[in-house]
Length: 419
Image (cartoon, rainbow, N blue to C red; front, side, top):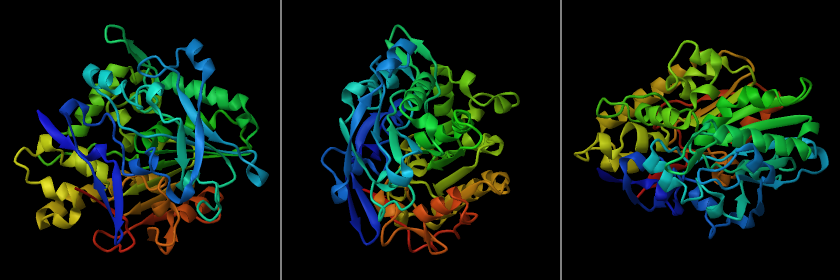
């Protein structure tokens, strides 16, 4: 069945605090998640460079080939690295790129013809904004750190290790992760006195799954923490009563050989697909972890809760693109999703070392966009923007566990509307 997804978004315009995103792409149901060019896509596009943001070149990891650490099409993986200086010279921030998943041979074959599956198609330069910005006024706590964006070209949140010879597909996300960390350690990260692993969307899931592994690269004296932005993907029931995202994750885990790289403590009592859902993992992460998520995550509404495949009559067509067009019963359904999210983090939130920023916005990936990370009108909870909440938590200046009241109480949101 053919249907439309908004993730081909290429243009975004801000109108009175509402971010309007243009662009729809017709694709097969199996391929809905293959690009997941999230709402910050316009920032990453070649034509868009907000506020003359720093452009950072792509570095291919030459040593990766010998380790079999390659993208879906066999090309070398890569990252963008801007060196730290001054007080941040020995501090490292690793940002794992998002970009959905591929759960079938067909979807992965398509994906390897894009920047999400081949370094041949990756941008040679990326604008560093939000948590990656090099300006203190835009990124007060991390601006002078070594900031690295690891590109995502495997389709399984850097966890797969398998291949499909007939389709000439390499599922080597785990090897890419390991090769990248080894390369960066050789370039100075081993001397880090503090480090933060972060990621957005599929990269936010990866930052959870790899958090303790990242901690173990460093001596105990090194301050190491993790941040997951828009990575709290829930095992939720969709509007038809089915489980769209669980079906997708089952395909990803089975196809890409993910099982062996999932946390053992989870695998010992749950099936592998369940252990790809962060709600079943976060309670056992030993390293301090901060979860940043919109309670009404735009991506999950579009692609997990109310995808066209679960809504053939189109009852959710307007609501999933614009929350102001939702009926009372649809808002009630979305409130149920928020409640599920709050239940999923209940145990996690009891740990003093963990942090939370759950705002009642219709958004996705708020750390990479400058307008949502740190700007004059950024989203706030308790009068504190996301950048300061994360910084206060990271440096132990204060405990940060902020959970918003239900929609529509938050007037600071930068809600996304798709057209």
